[in-house]
Amino acid sequence: MNDGKPQVVIVPCSGIGKAFGSVAREAGYELCDELRPNTTRLVALSKLVLGDEQARERVRRCPAITIDGCKLMCAAKLVKHNGGTVAREVAVLDAYRQHKELKPDGIAELNAEGKQLARVLAEEIAEVVDDLGRDASGGGNHA
Amino acid sequence: MPSLPERKVGIVACSGEELAEGTVTRLAALKVLHEIRRGETVTICLPLFLAGGEGDRAFAKFHPTITVDGCARKCAAHGTETYSGKPAASIVVGEIAAEHGIAGIEGRRCLNPAGQKAVDLTAERLAALVDQLLGKEERPDAGASVETPAASSDSAVVGCSCGSGIPVKVLTIAGQSVEVVALPLIFDKLREARRVPSEAVAQDLLEMVKVYNYVCPETEASWREVLVREFAAYCERELSR
Image 1 (cartoon, one colour):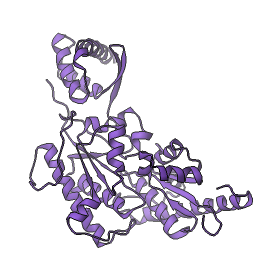
Image 2 (cartoon, one colour):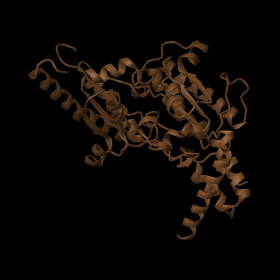
Image 3 (cartoon, rainbow over the protein chains, first blue to last red):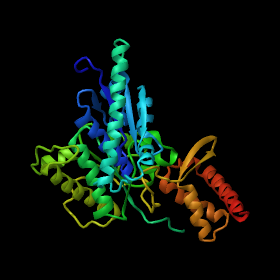
Image 4 (cartoon, one colour):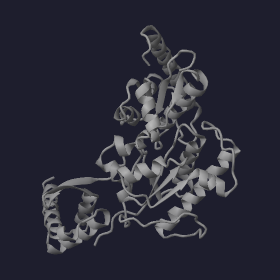
């Protein structure tokens, strides 16, 4: 908790084979480092693969937003696998369908369009984070 | 015996999003995959061992695999061993950085110079291990020991990280349900070589299957019987197409 606001856990996928995975990761950083640093917390997906107790506790205690780069939705599946609640499953492909002009390219280094797509995605998710905060504030102590 | 496609080394990075060292693992793996050992290496997203299918979990049984972790938790190494197969080698960025006196790796989104140096050194270490596993040892100073896994012969190309696509067939052998890694590929190769179901093929099949799968010596006769029967069924299906 920060300033009485609930922490929302952000879990991007670890996609390493396609640019969409890099967009997911970049969107996670944009959200957690720049847009909502006080109300979000990034959790590494690899910890959930391992079943790290601290990471499991975090996704069980806080609402999670997952950002996945492909249809296999690893991040969403692993949050659920570890007993967490996915408040919103975000798919980079859906965002791209809505912003066809922002075609991501590059995995190690995203192109400008990919970074812009990540920014757009992060802004959309920031609104979801705010909504979750409002819901939690209005609904008592639930996080 | 027909040969399977060219052997490649698997690389699994933890990609840990929380730490700069996680970014180092990812960039080092990508450098090896796309630049310095392009065509000799393949990868898979670590979470697919849990979120994917049987073909994904077969990854480390099929490819001799090197894991690269950002921290001492070793999520990639432990995750790979638990859900896929024992890695042939495992490295940790922090250990490589310490060996070279690199401190202050920062910038999980955009690495600082120390992080970039760590990427280069980690990629070099990975490449040396790839060379060892492929028997192309050009770098005698490769720092980690390599265990040659059971799955050590030729292997098939694995596509993108969104599903490794390693074919697996489930058979009932000696009363047990068994996932046989790479069997469809082996059938394809035997058919390409114009082999037909026979006693000789049954033994060849078993030898090829044993490259990627553990076969209990006491059950080898059952394996031979089932494998040749499945191969006959496969050939009939292919003929009727």
